Length: 230
Image (cartoon, rainbow, N blue to C red):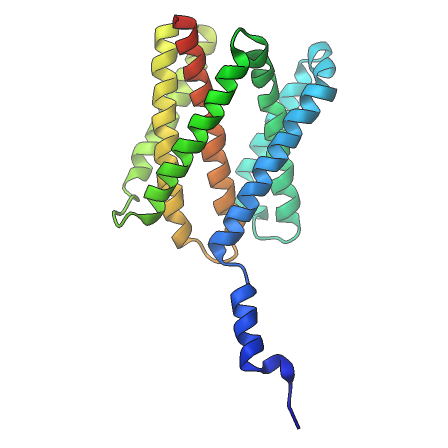
C-alpha cells in the first residue's frame, strides 16, 4: 500500500545531499595523499635510513617506482579499488624519497625553523593560488604550453647542475622560478578540476598533490639558499 519507501522524494533528496561531489572526492584523496606522504616520511626517517646509508641504490628503486606509477597513472586511475591502492602507494613512496632532504634540513642550523616556514608558505601559496584558479573567470588553458616549456627547462637545467654545480645565487634564482612555475600549475589544475569526467577524481587529486609536493620542495630550496646567504 505504501509502495517502495526507498523511492520516496525525501529519500531521493537525502541521497543526493549525502553523495559526495566530484570536488569533494578530489579533496578527500588529496588529504589522503598528504597523510600518506607524512607516513612515508616517518617510516623512512625511523626505519629506512640505515638501508639508504649502506645501500644507496635502494633509494633509486623508490625513485623508479615513483616514475612508473606517475607515467602509468592514466591506465589505473579509474580502476577501483586498484586506483586507491596505487595512489596511496605513490604518495607514500614520495614521502620516503623526500625524507632525506627533510632530515638534512632539520639537522642544519635553524633547520626546523626553515621547515616550518616552508610548510606555512607552501600552504598559504597553494591555498591562495588554488582559490584564484578555481574561481577566476579567465581561461587558464593557455598557460599549459608555457608551464610545460618551463618544466622541461627546469629538468634540463637540473640535469646540467648535477655535472656542473652552481652557486648560491643561481640556486635562489632556480628555486624562485620553480616556486612561480608550480604556483602556476596549481592555478591551472584547480581550474581544470571543473573539466574532468566523473571517474577521473584520482587523476585530479594526483595533479594537485604533485603541485603542492613540488611547490614545497622549491620553497624549501629557496629558503635554504636565502639562509646560506645570511
